[in-house]
Length: 295
Image (cartoon, rainbow, N blue to C red; front, top):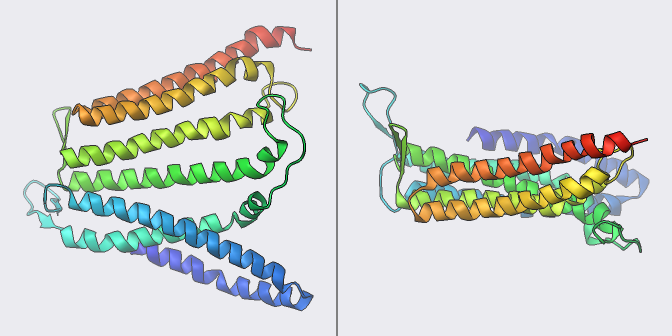
């Protein structure tokens, strides 16, 4: 409820400067410029907010329901009586999802110019020498892809954290003597979210971090250096594969009743490959191969 009220406060607080801007554009005779921006912001905000709400609310409802109708109870201490908060949390799911969706929608609306530039992009007539992409891709398409994947990672992380909390309260997740027991429906739900998170991280590596090598500052000039092309490029590709493989490992953990173990293993695999292939190996190439021969 507080999230919804805060989001509404931010929305209403923007109405006054919005009205002032309308009067200014109207005085200059540029009403169409203002309405173009306003419509783009509204459409983008509603589209993103609607998608975020549907995703968050669906996950919250799935976590609240479960295959086993366990009540949602909270016990402050061992001697206190358990309090059934099932109805309360069900009522909070809708305003919480709405409030978060409104915040994400308002944040996404600020990227209206980049989206319009992407929709009306034109080729530059030149390709980059590393990946062979049209140069306009890096100006118009890459920022939109980076924003969309970043949004997906943030929303999926929020949904994952919220469902973990709900499953713990439902006692579908029990930790006892260093052993984690997860109820079947909760195990499948969490595995799908974790695997989706790994897939999004892999997509970010391939579609965002790889092209960003062209903006690297590893060498003396801005651009892909020797270490970037002969070390970090390979490391990033391996990291992307490791992210996808980690997602598959998590799904297999749900099937083999080893979700917690496989998730920790998947995290270790991804960060291990990223550390060795993206951080340490390129740094060694830069220091041992490039730096001694650099002017």
